[in-house]
Image (cartoon, rainbow, N blue to C red; front, side, top):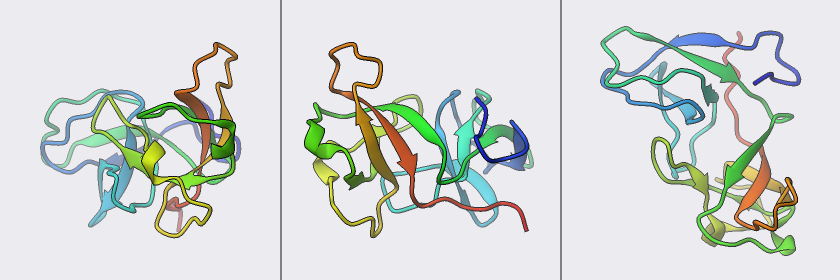
Length: 142
């Protein structure tokens, strides 16, 4: 993966102890440590680039930093209609199975993590796949 606006493909941050991830999981920060993004309104810092089973204390985790210009192909927990394009929603699921929460579609971004930009972007006739942009991200550069 290559971020359209970040100068680096990968960054490394310390993961929370015992974190388990697969490539493609969405990550957030908590107390300065990487954690899995949850369906709660958390800011997304990046996309996991390294599978880890129960990270040791102080372990660094590779991830692709993201920002609001980054589009990501995701699945949805149920079928989407074209009316979902432009709608904001949150994430659902856990490691290896993070999806867009179709039941949380909203016209306002307050407390939500992604906006849907296209349904069935690969023209496969699968309306459970969509492109999203992240609307609530964390800038890790100071």
